[in-house]
Length: 112
Image (cartoon, rainbow, N blue to C red; front, side):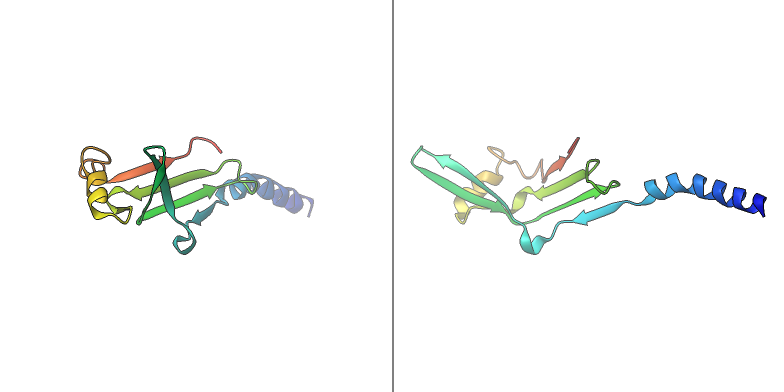
């Protein structure tokens, strides 16, 4: 019986670190409650407002306190929208976003 308890303790001791590392939580962005917006000052008298219509993001953490979180966020540049089609086309051009060469903007965190 003593050997059984010793074996049980050894198995639990060996498995505990694997269980801790195996517990990963992933949070996906709730697109119904998220937006990617921007504003740019224009001639120091007004602002131009816009947003990106297509984007995705997530955060992954192994620790319950979120200190090791890794955040990943992607925006589709061709979906820029300022409600002025001529300006949107200019923003998509090589003068600004160059959506043909850079179809996405990506953010990957290095630390939280």
